[in-house]
Amino acid sequence: MAKAIDPQSSMAALFGSRLRKLRVAAGLTQTEVGVLAHVVGSRIAQLERATGAKPTLELTRVLDRELVADELLIDLWPYVYREAFPDWSQAFIAYSARAKVIREYASHAVPGLLQTPAYARALLSVGHSLRDAEHLEERVAARLDRQVRLTGPDRPELWIILDESVLRRPVGGSEVMRAQLEKLLRMAEEPNITIQVLAFDQGEHGAMGGSLTMLTTPDGSHIAYTEGAHSGQLTEEPHEVERFSLVYDRLTAMALPPLMSLDLIRSVMEANPRAASVPSRSDRRRLAQQQLQQPGGRQLRAGGGRIPGRRARP
Image (cartoon, rainbow, N blue to C red; front, side, top):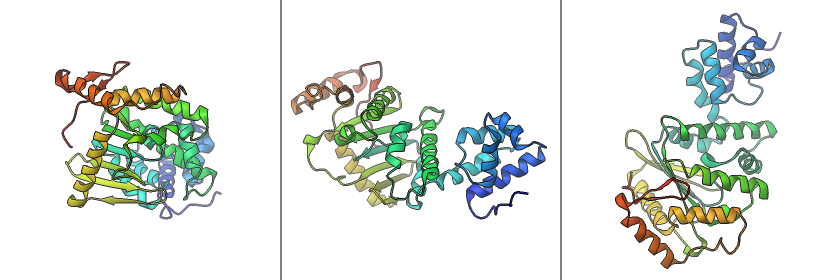
């Protein structure tokens, strides 16, 4: 007989214990549950013993439905999911999972919400807190699960400012990076996603040395989160949040307009040095004036998307 796990040892163990009880109550074997969930029976065994990769949200929903768990497993999943991340990032993940507006400046890498699996794997493989290969796959799966919300019914408004270095650092190699840049262009066509690039020629700014994320929750609360390579800090103190919000507003003003940003991403992807040159400041001012003259302050992106005009601060 398999050794019983202690449901108090971790959230993954608690999830596994509840899953086993639901399966036994339904009179099903692990193999039978695997068939219902479209996974091998050994995957169900791993979940029950908390020995394999943590469950994805999609798998959790299927198990909850097939075992008639009345959303018990779904309610547990966020806590299991957060265990794959360092302690200092878990509170941020909890807030961002329900934020209605996410504004982020990324200084070194493409934000997790927009990463491809290969890019995420390459980036997370050098993580300071990474334990082993299994932990890497848990982290990758958890990161990709976060992206589901971008196209779901409760999709947030996402505004991303990428430092130009993010585009030019070939994380994972040239092929991985090309696929990542293609995804940025594709995601920028979503009506709730805006991407800008902060060019090198803008020089110093208030968020150098790390990334900055501003969150607005459904109740209207504002949260700021700063992150370095191996640490992060969350703040809800109004004065500090307002200070960071002003920093983000300045970055928005300094960055290339969305249309020019997409052109730069495309030219870097196509490895055309001449086309990849940053537009002059006079060109930027001219485009900005053109956008302001459009009805409602908006202009169509190449490919059919929209370029938002200046939005009121959330």
